[in-house]
Image (tube, rainbow over all chains, first blue to last red; front, side, top):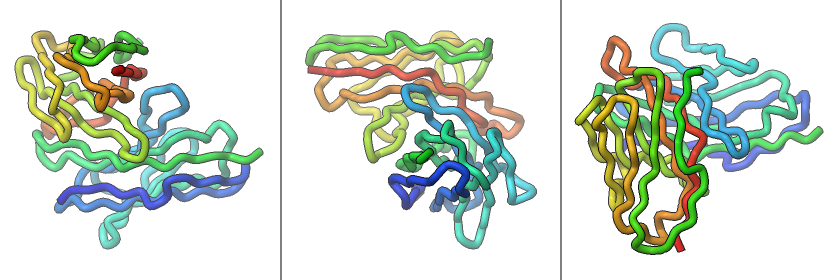
Amino acid sequence: AQSVTQPDIHITVSEGASLELRCNYSYGATPYLFWYVQSPGQGLQLLLKYFSGDTLVQGIKGFEAEFKRSQSSFNLRKPSVHWSDAAEYFCAVGPKTSYDKVIFGPGTSLSVIP
Amino acid sequence: EAQVTQNPRYLITVTGKKLTVTCSQNMNHEYMSWYRQDPGLGLRQIYYSMNVEVTDKGDVPEGYKVSRKEKRNFPLILESPSPNQTSLYFCASSSLGTSGRSDTQYFGPGTRLTVL
């Protein structure tokens, strides 16, 4: 069955510390991979995406993610977190074909300590 | 400005009273979708549409209807709302790209629905 897991429900980091949010998926062939961010009271915004090619993808706001096929993972990283990064982060996968669905993970809530 | 708009943003209603949440996008996107967001469950897809007059069920379609008569609009209809439909709803749109697959999704601001 197709699924996306984000093992960490909630993470707290200090401002300036590094960050890694984990995402694992089960989807058969390599799908499109996305990370979205949801600030409080807002809709979701794309941080970055992977379709093919270089497995290290750069996104907005200083985020990057690395696709590891052998681990079926697409972890999100940032070297130095800012207080404004506090938000909910969603990993999403799909679609494999035109009519496949995009599947979202349950989300990881990030808190940043000043 | 490229955007997805939803109305209303907040709605409190009672069980059984039909309601419609509108969604409109100005990016000429073929693909549109409705999601509901519940704590601990992430986003679950309700319905999606690949183009005008083409709609299909997502993961949680029970109790909802949609229509796609125009490319820009994709309303979500609850014919007889029930308390378990209390949730935060998002509309999204995307282009299909050369591969015919949904690309980056652009999300509306959300509609918080409470059914008493």
